[in-house]
Image (spheres, rainbow, N blue to C red):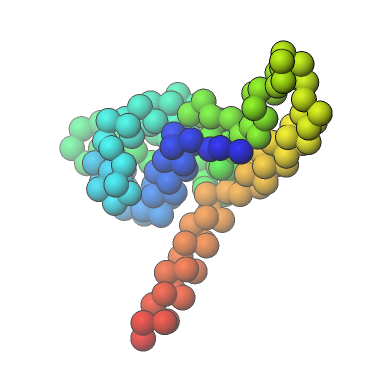
Length: 145
């Protein structure tokens, strides 16, 4: 199973927005600096995220992006789908033409795995990721002190 950079960066950028949502609209330049993702790449991703209703944009001074709804109601699977990614463990992209234009003997196994991964990602909200990140930061601070 391979999740491409597009899906990973979209989830990372959305998590950055969720982590910083109390600061008002966040610019892509800020996300780009914090997450070390190309600004032009973020612009492409956010165009898709906006079209799919996951982020809202505000223009002008003080403008930027914010998540469009409560972070408890935005799931990793939605983010990945919004940027035209799929979670597919098959070599044939689910078409069943895996081996010499026919189904391979493990086709159903890989389809089932893809479905389980999708279900797993459908259960993880941005709020859950924010909570986990904050807990990790607190643990790190405790280790330092």
